[in-house]
Image (cartoon, rainbow, N blue to C red; front, top):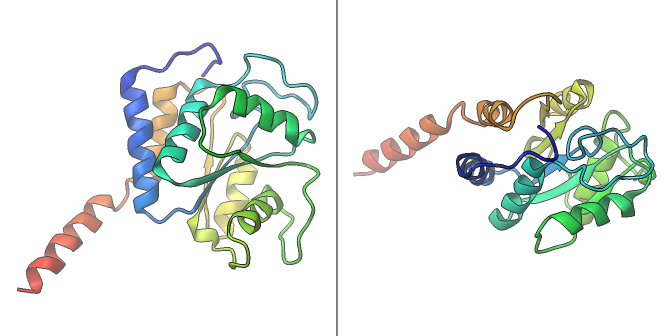
Length: 196
């Protein structure tokens, strides 16, 4: 995926469908990495050049926003306000995006592996006073180890292959959530029938 890539209507529809599915599955927070994920280059925690954001992830953030699913950026970038400004300049969001970076304060009880500290901080901000439920969190990150750490905590970690196309990555997203959607639907049908 390149920053210059335009998304066709079928990819936009698939993104919307995935966001709707995520909501139905009870996901409460989708965290997305910045460098080499939302941003096509690795900034090294410094300057964010213009036109480096991938349209796919801007579309994904907008679709999550419209669906009412909470989202944040979990990054090791040290200039959180710059990351926030870049995304807010590109994306049409109803609320300011939460960005948790390298300078994120470690909160009591916060794990320190992978992007867990950043996700824990974003969760605490959104769900003030509510214990974190890792099973309701998705992390999309180009670093497989960060995705693995979240998965080991009970969440869904999805590795973003940097050189993938929009279609290829959409396939990966759908594969991670398509497992038992049909079964859930079938169970609902049977449970309704058994009541009669």
